Amino acid sequence: MEANARWVALTAVAPVAWGANYFVTHEFLPAGHPLYGAALRALPAGLVLLAFCRQRPRGAWWGRSAVLGLLNVSVFFVLVFAASQLLPTSVASTVMAVSPLVMMLAARFLVSERPGAAHLGGAVIGLGGVCLMLLGGTGGISVPGVLASAAAVLVSSFGHILAKRWNTGAAGAGVLASTAWQLTAGGLLLLPVAVAVEGAPPAVSPSAFLAFCYVGLVATALAFAAWFAGLARLPAGTVGLIGLLNPVTGVLLGTAVAGEVLTGRQLCGLALVLAGVALGRPRGRAGVPGPIGARGHPASQAGWGVRSRWR
Image (cartoon, rainbow, N blue to C red; front, side, top):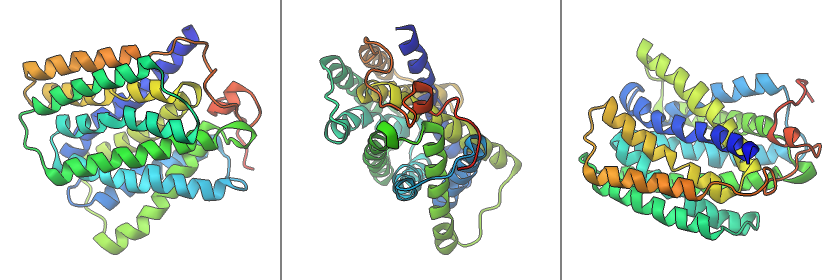
């Protein structure tokens, strides 16, 4: 149970960082450049992780990295960037919280993981909380922004579970390596499209540069490595419910920093979301649901402790 708690805490780094990312993107990054915004988020983060793990794709992982980069990075980042610009922080982050149920459905078909009653109950309670927070928001709601958030949920849920499936067994590449490859591939796919569609890159002010540093290093490199490490060790239902900390962070940050009003309805919603997260906590031995890494060792599976060498 103590090991499970450590993996839950590590995984929680991702949704907290992503919840703050909505505010940073909305307030500090140049508006009207979703392709450049996504490329400048993904490519530096991928290169940092690539320099750290020092592994190149091998065999099927060249194609897998491209597919995962397209789903989890290229398409997902553009949708999230657009939603962050079109919606208030609280609304953008709460729409994304429908992902637990979508992830459970994807896990059922892609990795044969059946969600337990606690996971389903937590998802229903969490969704109830999300509805309360969304309906209780005072900011304007953009239909294109909501649609962008919903599409991001579908794309990322499928891509995340696909990454879990492909990292199973002897063919698994390790979390740090596979995360580095898909971020780098996604950034490289985005860059020429950004040049063709948006022309010259936007001017970056000092505050925007610092924001890009947070978005790339914390909300992308660190967050994605933590998220995929948790997904490798914990059931998809548990990880999806931990993701509900995303809207909690977004709403609280919007209230504390952006001056958005937190209503009584949203407070009730926050309580329900936290109850849903608690219901999904793992109760078994750590590592049972997760795949075995390329070398058959849990550390290898998660990508920690892999020797730094190019191969």
